[in-house]
Length: 352
Image (cartoon, rainbow, N blue to C red; front, side, top):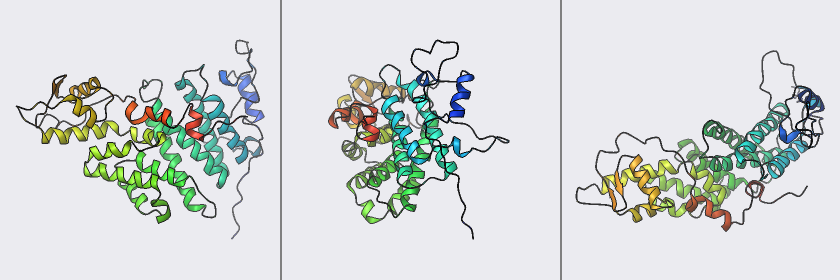
C-alpha cells in the first residue's frame, strides 16, 4: 500500500507574501504588523519581519493551501518564539489586546501544523509553548469582562493543545520528552475532578507517573476527591507558578465544596465560626474576600465570624466572578524569579 504524501510548506517568512500583500491592500493589517511611522497613512505598509499569517477558517469551495502558503516546522517555531517573546511581553499594550492578536496567530500556527501533519521534536516544542500560553492567559485574564476575553474559548483551545501534545508524547516514542512529566501534571491539574484525566494519569508508564511533579498532581487530585481541602491547599503551595495557574480555574469550586463541608460540620445557632480561620482554610488573600464569598453563597458573615446554617447552601454554587490569588499563584512569580510571560512559557528570554 502506497504511503500518503502530505504537503510540506515552503514559506520562509512568518506570513506568506501573497497574504501580506493582500492584507496590505485590503487595510487588514494589525497595528503590530505595520511599518513604524506608516500607521496613520492612507495605506499602512506591512512589515515583512512583523506580519504574521492570520487564522483562516476552512470553508466549502475554498481553494486548498499551496506549499508557498504553508510554513515548515522551523518557521512555525520561530513564529511562536516571536509571538511569545516579542509581542506578548510588550509593556505599551494592554495584555488582553496582545492576547487577542497572539491567540489568532497561534491558531494559524496550529492550522499549518495540521495541514502538514507535522509531528516530531519541533511540533512538540510548539505545542508545549502554546499550551502554557493558554494556561497562563487563563489566569492573567480571569478578571476581564466577557466582552474583551472569552474564558471558555481559551480553555477549549488549551484542552485541544495539551491533548494533542499528550498524543505526540505517546506516538513519538523514539524521541526523549524531558518536559513530559510537567505537562502530564498540568493536564491533571487543569482537569481536576475529571475521571478521564485521572484514568489517563493512572495508566501512565511508571517512570513518568513516579516523577515528583506528577505525584504532586495526583496527591492534589486525591485530596480533592476525598474532600480534604486543608491537605489540598497545603499541597497546592508546593506547585510551580504554571501549575498554580492550571489549578486556579478550580479555586471557586474547591472553596464552595469546602464551605459545604464546613456548613454541615459547624452548623449551630450558638456557634460563630472565626473569619481568620476560614480565611486561612479557604486560602483567601484577605478576610474581606472571605466575607464577600460567604455573602455571595448566602451565609451570614461579618468581621465577628460566619454563621453556618444547614440547608442554606442547597441551591448550588452561585455565579461568582474569578479573581487573582496572591497566596496561591502570584507570590510564586518572585519565588521563581519570573519577570515576564516569556519566562513562564519558555523558561528563558530569547535574544533575537
